[in-house]
Image (cartoon, rainbow, N blue to C red; front, side, top):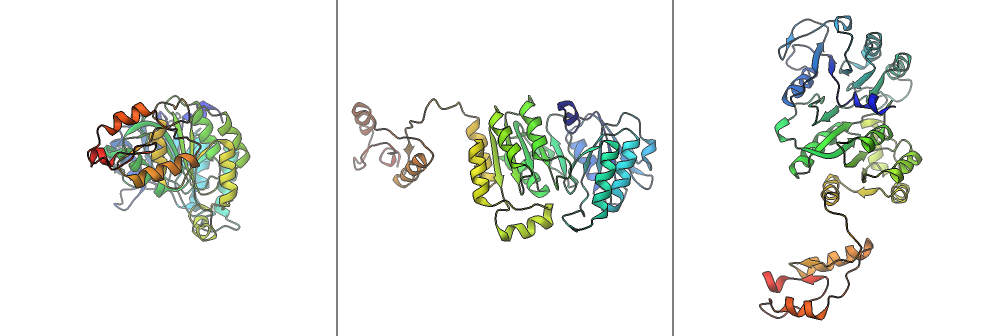
Length: 360
């Protein structure tokens, strides 16, 4: 997919939201609310079965009523109506869609007619789509915000990290967590079942995106490991992957969650290491990596380690050796200078260094 085509998922000039109603329980109208809160500047067209008004905008009752230049459709209708909605979009010239609806292979794996119809209709009209079974996109630069759960826009921080999450819930929490850690993000994508676009498409786009300096992914399955490795080797930007669903226990819930097939932990570790991809074990570690990549590059592998505790100095020493760093002896003149600041004179200075006698 061309760079300009992918850009329509993040910087659309206009969007149509399908599945909107006046019902207070309606989720699709939250998509419009979120875009308002994020100050999305494009046009928004609510589409639903019944006329009404949502967030100051009239609900259109048919796709035929849409203008000809709508760039992106966000679809949250029952699964049996998704294919016909894609058909209506295709006839109207809409070539990009976010399908939030669930109830496809993650719910019923065999002979899923709704999924087969969706794939066929999207191919017929050349519609590229994110999902299904996802919450779509948040782009802090354009203000596009398509989750169907209310988003606290003021809590989100703009940054230069772009994130792909296979789970909708993890998408939301990653957006908040990266913001709370003062890292922020440029774009975050909820990939869902990955029936059409997958992590390869997003990585390719982020590698060329001027607003992205590093790429982070939470994946429950890897669709094309060899292509991921090849991309990562070419990338000038660091790539961090938190890969879950590596156990038999996790695979049971993962398949019913996003139709994800497990990849063994040893296979994943080997492949990611070969590609130069950083492996994270949780979202917190992703933010640690993100903060590390914002620091100036190291000029070598020789470190001076300073800790306020001997125990932590030992832990850091182990970590240095594990990851290929060295803690060389410090010159005598420097050690004597440091020791002159000791109070008790009971801790021998070395590298790694216990500063407890200086600061306790």
